[in-house]
Amino acid sequence: MTYDRSQRRQTEEELRRLGHTHAVLSRCNRSLARALDERALLTAFCANLVEEEGYGFAWVGYAGEGRGALLRLAAHAGQGDAAFAAAVLACANAGDRRSACRVACEVGAPVILRDLSVRSALAPWADTAIGQGYRAMIALPLRADGAAFGNFSIFADTPDVFDPPEVALLAELADDLAFGIQTVRTRDAQAQAVRRLRNDAEREARGHLAATLHDGVGQTMQALNLGLKQARALAEREETVPVALLDQLIDEAGAALRELRAVSCELRPLFLERLSLLDAIRHQCNETAQRTGISIQVSAADCSFTLDDQVKEQCFLAFREALSNAVRHAAASRIDVLLRVRMNDRLILAIGDNGVGFDTHRTGADPAGLGLCMIQERAAAVLGRSCVRSSPSRGTIVRICVPLTKDTILCP
Ligand SMILES: Nc1ncnc2c1ncn2[C@@H]1O[C@H](COP(=O)(O)OP(=O)(O)OP(=O)(O)O)[C@@H](O)[C@H]1O
Ligand SMILES: [Mg+2]
Image (cartoon, rainbow, N blue to C red; front, side, top):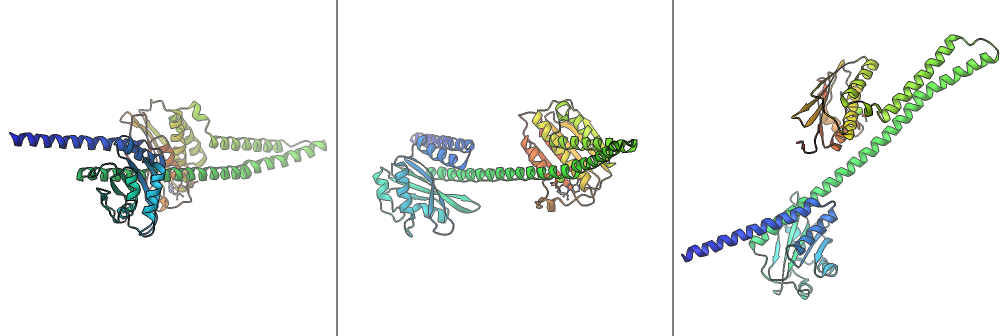
């Protein structure tokens, strides 16, 4: 009977602990998931430990390069605040002292000071901490790729609070925080790369536009100008202006007009506003087939959907780049374009050619071309995916998949 009661108490205690652990983890992970940037992430994390979990003080420090490197304060929260954090940091960084925070970084494992009133070389700041009312401390490493890049420390006002289950929980939290920091950094680096790409693409587009206007419309207008001067000289001498000369001038004016239309259409395909995606694709394919002589087939299935304007524009521009690549690089005799809906909630757009193909791995590293990256970026901008399948002399297929509904999540 006694045995049963004590066993039940033990089970209840374990359940309570498990519940507590789960609650702490999910509260802290919520602050990780919501963070918009690294500073906000660290601040919310420390504040959560102090305000919700009742610890006295929490702080995060980043280590410099190399063994024994100094720590830099990244975020803190709790009683004593900035002055206490600065005092702990100054002590931790002073000379070659092996304080708990620096040792946790060096060895990549938690360092626990169960009772600060027991003197330890690992706690050169113990008097300051005790003065603030703290009695125990834990320093946990923040790890990525097998190495510690920082430290996450907590001060508590009761000795012995950092028992094995609490340490296990905090170690898990430290790993989650380290993962959150890495995720935010990767996301920021990706956003920066996308911004750079967009700037490069805009610069490239402006250069292309300037060259098209200069070499195309500019030359045609010059020829038109010369012809008009010639016609005027004839008229001045009251001679008849030959019909052939007038026809030539009309042709040149027509060509200039067509070139201008093509340039403005490239800048913003106005026809997209009045055509469905399928009709816009057909229109572009007809125009390209006529201009290049390449046979271009468009096939479509289940295309009775209505697309958001942004999705339509991004899909069309991605398709146009894939088509332009097939025309410019593939030396293809045939291009196939396929548009269809899959599983009722995603749109598949594929552009295939029977041309020379290329080594996709080689091109991935080639920073010169922007088109393939832009296809990927355009698909991602509308929460979709794109992939390119190609190999030398076996043609190329570009496949774009975008969600038709907000709830659709595409697997990578
Ligand atoms: N359909 C294709 N057939 C053969 N090679 C292709 C095809 N699509 C792309 N490539 C190869 O991949 C390279 C990169 O294409 P990408 O569209 O990124 O750049 P680009 O077309 O060279 O330049 P940009 O698109 O910036 O004007 C091309 O230069 C070409 O070598
Ligand atoms: Mg291209």
